[in-house]
Every structure is written in C-alpha cells, then in structure tokens.
Length: 398
Image 1 (tube, rainbow, N blue to C red):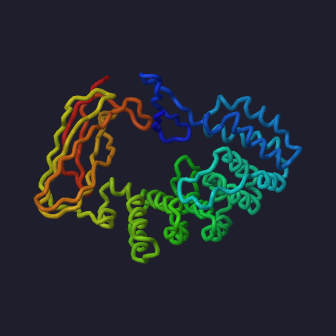
Image 2: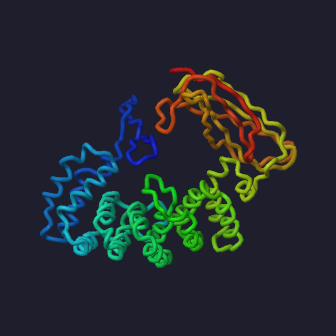
Image 3: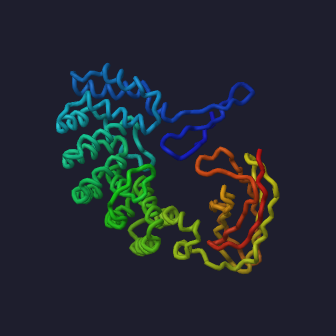
C-alpha cells in the first residue's frame, strides 16, 4: 500500500494507491477514523474502568459513539472530552486524580524523535483545559503526566492565556526535567504560531529564555521543536532569530552537526524570502560568482493536473556554493499573481564548472491551500536569495 499526505491540516485525509491484483485502485484513508474509532474509545474506557470500578464504561462508549462517525478530527477530540464530563467526578481534583491513575506507562524514554504517543489521549488534554482552568496548579500536574503519553501543546495554551505568570514559572522546572517530552512541551506549547493551535497573548520573545537552554538538548524531538519555534518567530522578528542562532553557534553547547541542522530548519522560511542575514549565516554568498543562469521552460503550455517541465543551467565563474530555488507566481482570480517558493537544488561548483537541473512540477487542480486559474503564469529562478532568471507558461483547463 502506498499512501501520501493529501493536506497538512487536522481533518486531513490520506489519498493513496492500493494494489489490487494487476491493477491499481484509488482509495482514501481517513486519519480521523484511524485515530478515533470504536476500538480506541473502548481502550480509553477500559483504562478508566480499571482505575475506577464504578466508571460506566458501557455508557461512556455508547455516548461517544452515538455521534463520533459524523464528526471531523478536532470535533472528535472535543466531543470525547465533553462526554467525559458526565462520567468523571464533578470535582476537578478527583477527576484529575482518576485521569492520572488511568494512564498507561509513559512513552519509551529511549526514543529520541517523532514519539507523539496515542492520539486518544488528546481528549484528556481538552478536558483538563476546560474543566481545570480555575485550578491551574493541579491541572498543570495532570498535563505534565499526560504529555508523557501524548503531547499537550494545544491544551497548555489555554493556561498560558489564563495564567501566564504561573505557567512560565512552572516551565522553568519543566525545561530541566529528565523527561524529554516535558522539555519539548516548553518549546512547542509556547510557539507564537503553532499550527492549528489557539492564539496566545504571550509575547513572542518571552520563551527565548527557555530556548536558550533547549537548543543544546541531546534529543532531536526537542531541537526540532526549537527550530520550528524559531521559524515561527522569524515571521515576526527575523533579526532576533538570526542573531540568536549566531550566538548559539558561538557558544558551542550543541554539536556542530545538530547546530547546522537546526539552523537550516529554523531559517527555511527566511531563506525562501532571500533574507540576507539568514543566507549569510548559512554560508551562502549574496551575489555568487556565476554566469547569468539559463532557464528553459520545456512545457510552455500546461493543463491543470499535468506537470510543468523546465530546466536550468548554472555555470560558476569562481568556486561557489549555491542554494537554488524556483518561484511559481500563480495567477489569481483578480489578475494579480501570488508567489510560492519551492526547493530545487543545493550544489557546490568549481570555477568553470556547470550543472543542468531538470524539474517536473505537477500543477494540481485539487490542492487545498490554493486554487489554480488558467492564464499566463510565471516561473522565476532564485539563487542564494536573488531572482536571476525567468520563464513564462500558459496554464489551461484540464
């Protein structure tokens, strides 16, 4: 079975090709059904029933499943949390204690990346965020236990908005905790632009004091969050991100390999924009010694759904390290164009050396983040942040 991600959003589906005999059949794989289904709900009910013999497992499962199939992914999280309010103790202290008793063992502490845990515990975070907001000290203890089974970066944001000083104080301890899930929560939960996360009033620069400690973490799960956090900040204050990364590199507390990876990952948005400070920090010359690149559009007319084919030729006049991107300026409904930057190649050339790079870019008509309109579209070549070659193509209806 081959499955590829269709859209990066919480209610996405996977669109995949499933082999069927000698032919191929198109099929959809629903993430919401894989993460929240009858079996998962029964598993959660079993945990509570084992922790408290009086827990009405049958009633809980019945009420959850009554409408669950009709809901999208995030709605399922909120629905399960809502049903729990009728089956857990009314007093939050008792409910929190029961949640903690019901939890399975912590996630394997020997893993170092992509260990998100089981999504069925996301509703418990939503429950704590709603029912425990007036008991923040107790609620934060429960969230700390939960995040060792499933990341609580969404739930913690409610407490940041309602009890900022307290959460920031508690995070001073979490940032040094031996469990990397808790350390990651400090970075991930305070991101200024966490995808799908509730907006927080916390000043974007306030968590820097935590990132100053977390960037040297030995766990990629944590450093990936730090880099993503910086990428968020870069959309608000690019200078702060570039200067902080330069400072961390000078401090030498992180391995050179990991620091290089974090720097590239944190600056990916700024690099696409051609930000001079970011490119300089990554070692790319602003005006590299190359001849004017040659851009050839091999498919000057392309139907929506087909692939744009083009190639570029680069020749170095002196030794050069090149970061090559391409920009597609898509026609909008009002006649203007909207630019999207895509990666093409990273290459090092010796003086006099040349390279030709070919690319096929499928122009999908079913993309969820933008819509394609027939008409003249623009292709631009970007080398080390500078536009240095162009080509046009006409997009037609399929």
